[in-house]
Amino acid sequence: MSGNGFTTCLWFDGNAEAAADYYLSVFKDGRLGRIGRYSEAGPGPAGSVMVVEFEINGQKFVGLNGGPQFRFSEAISFQIHCADETESDYYYDALTKDGGEESACGWVKDRFGLSWQVIPPGAIDLVTDPDPERAARATAAMMKMKKLDVAEMRRAADAA
Picture 1 (tube, rainbow, N blue to C red):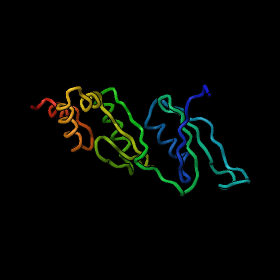
Picture 2: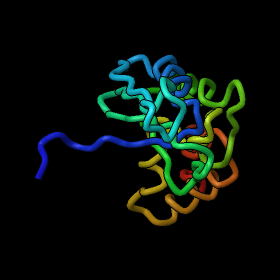
Picture 3: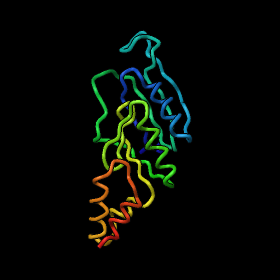
Picture 4: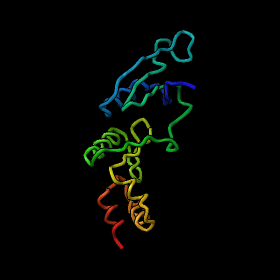
C-alpha cells in the first residue's frame, strides 16, 4: 500500500506542456512540477518533452506525450464543484473558449478534448432530492440545459 495517493496520467499527442500551462492558467490553485524529456533512447525525439507533472486544486497530474494512438473520451471526466454561480460561470467560460465546446447537463470539453462537469452549488441536491418527484422534475429540466441553471432547476423541482 502506498501513502502517496493517486496521480492522474493524461495522454497527449505532443502538447502535454501546453496543456499543463493551460490548466495552470484556468485553475488558480496550481503549480508546475518536473518536466522529463526523451533521451536518445526515444521513443520521442531526443530533448522533446516526455512528461510534465503539475498539480491543480491538490490533485496531481502527469501529462504524457505518448502520441496520436489514444484520445480522450467522455467516459472519463473531472467534476468541478463550484462555490457559487460566479465560479461556475468562470470555469464554464474558461474551459469552452479557444476551441473548447459545450455539451449537455453542465459538461464541457476543453480545447485538448478533456471532459469536465461544471457543477454549480445546489445542482446535485436537486437531482438527488429525497422526494423522487422533485428530483425527476429537476432532472428533466437539467436534461434540456447545456450550462446548468440552478434557479431554473429549482423552479422545475418546485412546480407541482
